[in-house]
Amino acid sequence: MPGRGTEAGPGLEEAGLRLDVEGPVATLTLNRPERRNAMTFAMWHAMAAVGRSLPEDVRVVVVRGAGPSFSAGIDLGMFAPGGEGERRFSGGADPAEADRFIAGLQEGFTWLRRPGVVSVAAVHGHAIGAGFQLALSCDIRVIADDTSFCMKEPALGLVPDLTGTKPLVEIVGVPRALELCLTARTVGAEEAARLGLAEIVTPRDGLDAAVRGLVDSLLAVNAGAAAATKRLLWQAPERTLEEQAAAERHEQIGRLRELFASRP
Ligand code: CAA
Image 1 (cartoon, protein in one colour):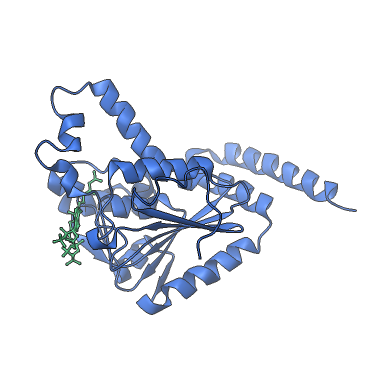
Image 2 (spheres, rainbow, N blue to C red):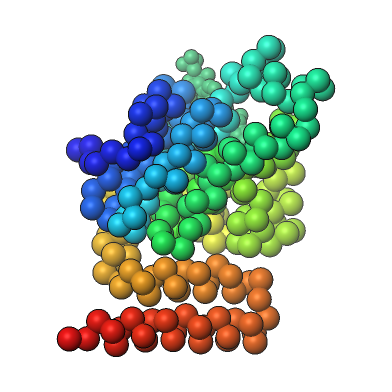
């Protein structure tokens, strides 16, 4: 059942997206099943708009794909001769403008790491290229046992540029990330779980229930504590132990103040 719209509402359908907001849970569905949810520039701009206009009380964002695949990656039609890709990125295009354009596309992915929400990728079938990067942009991946991940960009003469390289390296390390990207090989669900690319693996027909169970557990935790803990955990790898200890103190003092203030 469709929930409340957001100011990003109009244009979502045309961009191949569907957004359902039910209280604290937003579900963003890639909705071009006939194209295996291949993603266009318009879709990435619309995803960025969803991030900007998400209601403040949304605490969990589930990202999923309609039909047989999570996503077949970038819509290859955009690379057709004379297509939008060529117009924007061929030799005559202004590099600064091209940089700004890609930065705008990346915004469609980066908001999923915002501390105020926990993002959950519910993945099934193929997650190729940009589809794999979208799953990597989420905090947690729940995958069906028919999932296959593939970072296909280098095989097409490209690099993964939709913010997927950082989480990939954080999860599997540089050598494995190199091996996966430069062979563009397919990783099945079992190996994905072994590599840490999935937190939960479930039979295909149990995916929705597994996501629901996870979402319920996430919502059972205090919202402020969840946001503060997400901030701490994602920033931990960049910090020294001393810096992280100081960050923990800072967050905890904030938590304690709020808890005491809420006492009758
Ligand atoms: N772009 C445009 N159309 C696509 C598409 C894509 N990425 N992937 C699938 N489609 C279309 C197919 O052309 C087909 O259209 P028709 O019905 O008109 O023939 C329709 O979706 C269904 O596709 P299939 O019949 O191939 O479906 P399948 O279930 O047998 O196979 C698949 C699914 C394995 C994903 C296969 O479609 C495939 O390999 N697609 C291409 C994947 C790819 O190379 N993506 C680019 C990744 S790189 C990237 O994403 C770059 C970046 O970010 C910078």
